Amino acid sequence: MMGSCSSPLESVSTPDLPRGLRGLNNLGNTSFMNSVLQALLHTPPLSSYFLSDRHNRYFCQKKNGVSGNVSERNVDGALDGGHGSKNGSFCLACDMDAMFSAVFSGERMPYSPAKFLYNWWQHAANLASYEEQDTHEFFISMLDGIHEKVDKDRHRLQSQGSGDCCIAHRVFSGILRSDVMCMACGFTSTTCDPCLDISLDLEQNQRGSAKATSAKSHHSCNGEAECMNSSQNSGIPTLMGCLDRFTRPERLGSDQKLFCQQCQVRQESLKQMSIRKLPLVSCFHIKIF
Image (cartoon, rainbow, N blue to C red; front, side, top):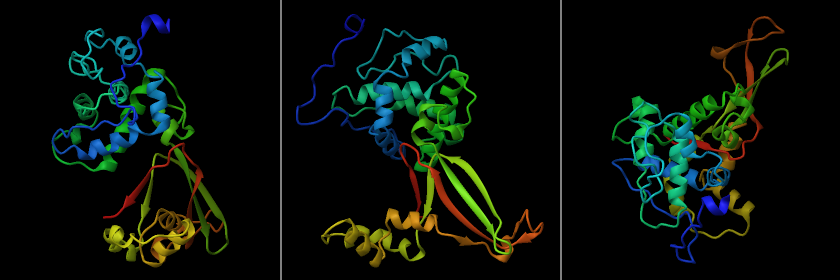
């Protein structure tokens, strides 16, 4: 069946360059989108999912009654016709499938993700413009669009926290844990929430030095520990330093008193965040502004 219904990829790439190295055209201030798409295209769990035909865009479009001739393809392997325009139906997972096929086809000419951009506009109408958008906002919106479509088609009722409702959550979904301890009696309240990314703060003295990171990092280090200590001593922000700040206990002031179930009154508390369940791929949002 595989032999009769498929053909091997043409060897159009040079032997010293692996497949998947293909640029994305800027469609008018879309660098925010291209940077996220390039990262996702080279995320191993996602590439394994789409390149192994776990989401076949032709079957998906046929099942949802999307108009267009599935036998007609353009040079990038995308579907010609009015996918997402004639009947109001769109699927970002189908667009990702087409993009993976195009990027890993061996072609070197830059690819234009115009169809993906148009269908993302249908999902996030408030962000539909040719202006530069926030990269983090686009990332969350795009994963939400994939989850919304795939989860609806499969009629699954699992919670997002289970991380098994769609490919987006299977790859990026983790669980954050928040412990709030009463400073008076020691009673601890624990809350767990699903998350697709973790927002990390920089130290106050690191915000100004972040811009000078490249200028101060030309020295050589003997080992990871020495580099980490050198970075911390010079005020250069590190991922480990941001995670340490994120999980550091924080005392809530008198203006943030929380209700204690044991004391039955509002008390000053000590709050600490931690990661209960790591996702397959951790995404960190660095709040530099």
